[in-house]
Each structure stands twice: as C-alpha cells, then as structure tokens.
Image (cartoon, rainbow, N blue to C red):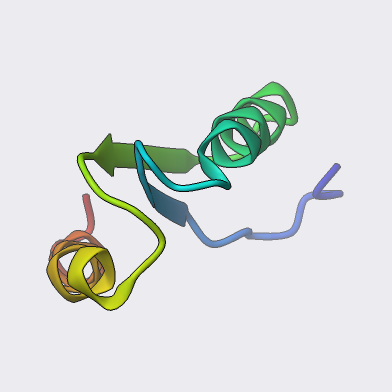
Length: 67
C-alpha cells in the first residue's frame, strides 16, 4: 500500500459513548490490516470537548515521545 514510502504513525482516540466509536474501531483494524502503524485508544466519553481536552493532551505526549 505504501510503495516503499515512509508513512507517519497514526493515533486514533474515541470515547466509548461516541456515535463514531464502532467506525473508529473498524478504521483502526483496516489500517492495521494494511500494514500501517496505528494506536487506537479509547475510554469513557462522548464526541465532545470534555473528551477532546483530555485526549488531545495524550495524543501530543504520544506524538512527541515517539510512542
């Protein structure tokens, strides 16, 4: 799929009460099946700013610490 190109790591986070939760789980699986590096994190929450506030901070830690 990547034709030898370097592809960035992918971080997905989704609240377990989010209406897009199942779609995010499925997307993470498709990404993995295509041989790409993906981290899918989830926890309590919905698709709102409360969830985003916590998880954007975690995403930056993941990004800058190279996890």
